[in-house]
Structure formats: C-alpha cells, structure tokens
Image (tube, rainbow, N blue to C red; front, top):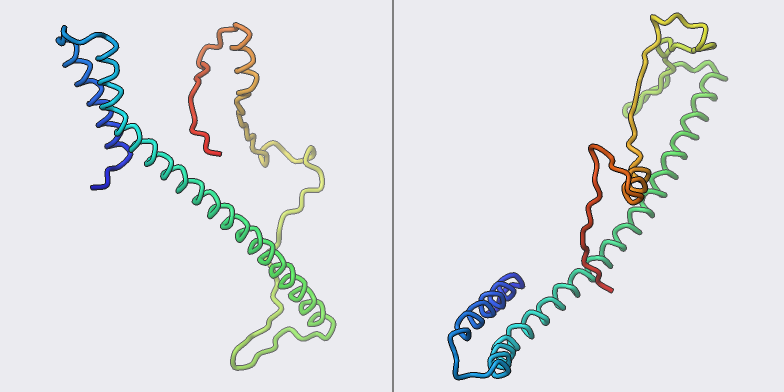
Length: 173
C-alpha cells in the first residue's frame, strides 16, 4: 500500500505521541532504553517519509523544468506573434497608401472586399492647460511604499496599519 506524504507525516506524529505517552508509565526501562525504543520504532516511518519527500521534490524539480520549457515556448511564440503583427501592419499600410495613390476606394472579388473608409473624427488636444476645467477629470492613485514601511518598522518606528510578518519557504536545489 502506497501512503501519501501527509499520511506518513501524520503516522509519524501519532506514533511518536503514542510511544512517548505509553513509555511514561514504564518504570522498568531506563531513559536511554526508552529513547532507543522510540528511535527504532520511528526509523522506518522517517525513512518512508524521507523517500516520499525526495520523490515529491523530484517531481517538483521536473515540473520546474517543464515550466521553463513552456516559458521558452511562450517567448518564442510571442516573438513570432509580434513579427506577424508587424508584417500585417506594414502590408496594410502599404496597401492603403497604394489604394490612395490610384484612387481605388473599393476592390472586391468573391472572397475579399477592400474599401477605403472614413474614420470618425478624433479629438486632438493641442494645449492641455488651455482646456476649461469642465473637460478635465482628476484621477488619483495611491501607491503603498512597502519598502519604506519595512525600513521604518525595522528601525523601531511604529507604523499604524502595517506590520512585518516572517514566513518560511521550501528550497529545492
């Protein structure tokens, strides 16, 4: 029967607790003998846990490699997409200019229709300061300076509404 990593960890914790509780009542055994019994009993479970943990870490490493390959493919495809977008824009501009030069405002066949059309007028702002306030909108954004807050707290300053929090991470090399 294959146990999951969390099952092995739970078994280890339960076995350790059960052994320490049951050995408290044993007065015939020395403290060293009790410790040896605990170590012997838990050795198999910790070996199973270590093996399973290393297998999970290996799987994570493989996923990281796959992720890197996917990122590389995304970058390659992104570059290809930009190349295609630029080529489409260049050829569209070229076709537009040539149609204007020849006066051809509409060309069609059974599959395609090329037409020169007028766009709706767009607003061009020549001088922002000269515009009346009626046509201005105030947009305000707030950015929290987290690095400044961290520095202040580390220097002993109490910052209301913020605190530092430490955490742990798993490192697989």
